[in-house]
Image (cartoon, rainbow, N blue to C red; front, side, top):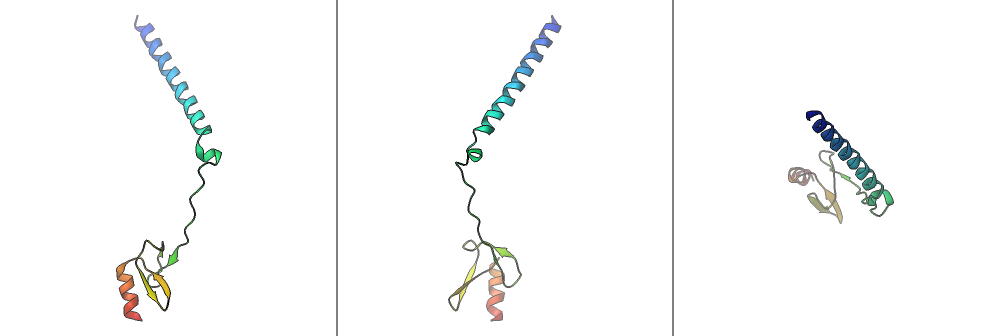
Length: 86
């Protein structure tokens, strides 16, 4: 009796494992990234902070406009230091 239950549990476990494996293969084969439906995001050009040299994302970092040129900084502290230097 206990042997039959163990064999039944083993069979259920194996069937479930095979089912999940096949489900993953099908899901991976039909993924939008594989078929090119979802293109990679555009690269963003980083700019260098003139005070400490950290590279930052323009538009998401503190900035200062000098002589018509926008200068980006990693922090408000670097922006203040730059302002004090010039």
